[in-house]
Length: 206
Image (cartoon, rainbow, N blue to C red; front, side):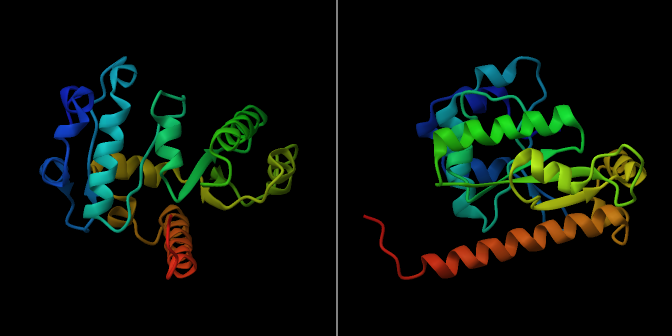
């Protein structure tokens, strides 16, 4: 069950701190902590953007890494969350409509955020085997005018099993192709975070 309620996300942000956020977090035996949101039709439009940012600010003080699973549609708080993130991975598929939408999202986000946030494409449901008339990674890179940052293979059986069991993929089939791709993605994110820490060490923000 979601730990956050709609009231939590629409309230005055001044009441949100680390104690409030910590009380809403559920932790899996694997060590992953989850702050789940309610699935209520139309709820996203009622959310107070300041409440979202206050919760994420508190979460960043509690955890070294914070991953936000954002909806595809842009909401009043979307760009604020992206602007406060070190890295944004825009998930796409190897289809013309998906790549076109991803390119539009990247261009719009960069026009607002500039170079403050790294935005990179991640291809989901990727098949390494070549099929006739199928798009390739090189086609995606040409369409997006940038390199593909990472790929996640198509492994519907593993994903379905993890969802039905309510477990992380790595806990269900840790040696599956899906789990291996996800692990590579996490390792790249950790390495990126470490490099950013080195580059920013000794710097003073004025």
